[in-house]
Length: 505
Image 1 (cartoon, one colour):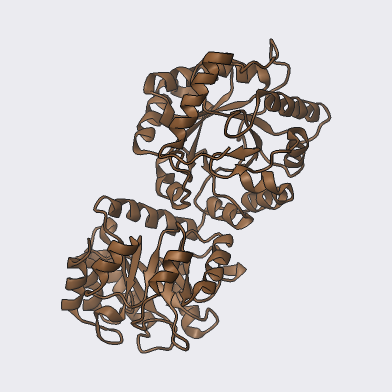
Image 2 (tube, helix red, strand yellow; image 1 turned 45 degrees about the horizontal axis):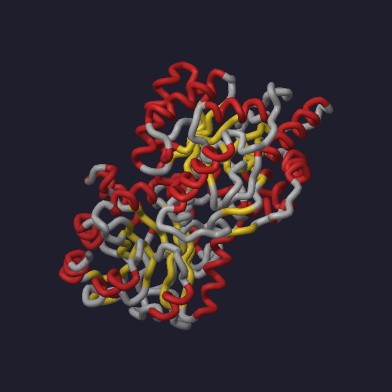
């Protein structure tokens, strides 16, 4: 059953309350009178949490005929740290029977000396007694969604979890959720570190829209042990989550539909580490959230070759400054970028320094190698791979990718980059033989029919005259402006820059 409503979460909770009223907290299912299995700490080590999931409100049936024991066996053999079992019956088609079966499987594996995963009950739990039921069914941890519980109830449920020596997987996303997380952590005192595992869902449970930058923007607000939830579809996505410093990932649809993917997802996440790429995306996401307060798109001014141009752009409020490292008329030099970076960082508060980006079209050219080296040293905050895909050696480098768009088929490249773990892709107008700074715009119809719901980063032909219209029609998250504020390539017109910022919404 697929539902389309303004607040899917509210619908699920209301339906669940009605079912509890009718069937009781065990939903009419016979459950053990006492717990009959051992205990494995939930996320005792960094790793993947893989899900037994038949359906979802947004996708309908995912794997309606799955065998929970067979699937959980595959997950255990892939060395997942935990198995998440959906027990919500209306929209996820789960059951407490699945939870009991998976817990019994893990106990059998423990008895045989095999790798056993912790077991998470994932549901929209509302009452303390549901913790008791989860414990008796064999769960090692339970999901507590801060958004659907008031302060008092969340604390009561977390304390009940603590009394069973289980873990509370507290999901947060909205600003008020973090306040609740702080309250429950303080209420548990010294035991909070063992009991609480925080998770941030990249999927908004009110709309089921997924944004991989949401976990990046709040990682610094979470405790050391934290989980990136939803949106992990490929091993590259798992690597991205690890780069942000998350202790765990929760993967549902991708592995439920394709269990053979489990091993690669687990291995990729466990072999990854927090790195410069993740630090860049965390900083960008925090800037993005600050910009959202003004409902104004983020701005990148590209092709900086003069100090005064870059400093004025920063003064006007640009979020990113681009320096071109390819043999065009906007080509910069290493000495200029080093000098500029030192000066702007010394003259402004850290939170008011734009991100400095080196734009390259050939990582093997001398110019490309210079930009990569400057990013590795921290002189540049990131590298923009323009029209190219970073090599395996560059995946941990702070970077993002730009795809050249002229027609519908060019979005195949965008889809490929997303599968490669890129959370954002800059879309630049394609003109054959010219890598960028063309003054041409991407056909609006192509964007409307092909972009879907991806947040738009737009480059090409944006100028003071059309920026307001572009923002009104397309609502970009970021605009990248170069030739639209120039007198000549690399020579910015200060009046045009002022006019551009003045006409932003």
